[in-house]
Image 1 (cartoon, one colour):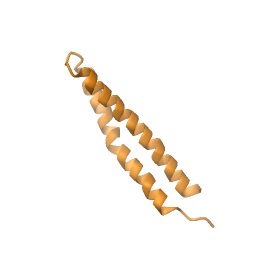
Image 2: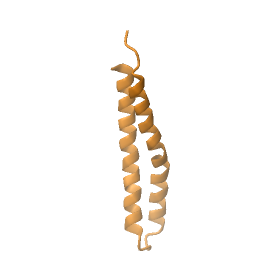
Image 3: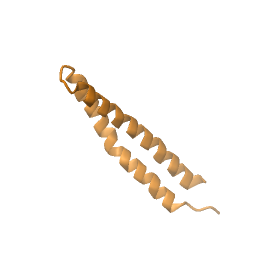
Image 4: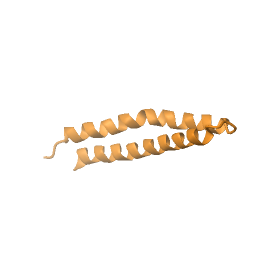
Length: 73
């Protein structure tokens, strides 16, 4: 009988915990960037928001994949 790999489970939970703040920060920064198009730092804020959203998506996939690997592998 196989048991859960607790080290891998913890690693997956850390990935998901890292994605949690990015899930909130990314869309709020994008919203702020799109409301201030005339501001000189518009492009920089927009790029930061897009990177935060992409980072959240990456960490979510990585975390869920690691959780599945720890539970079923």
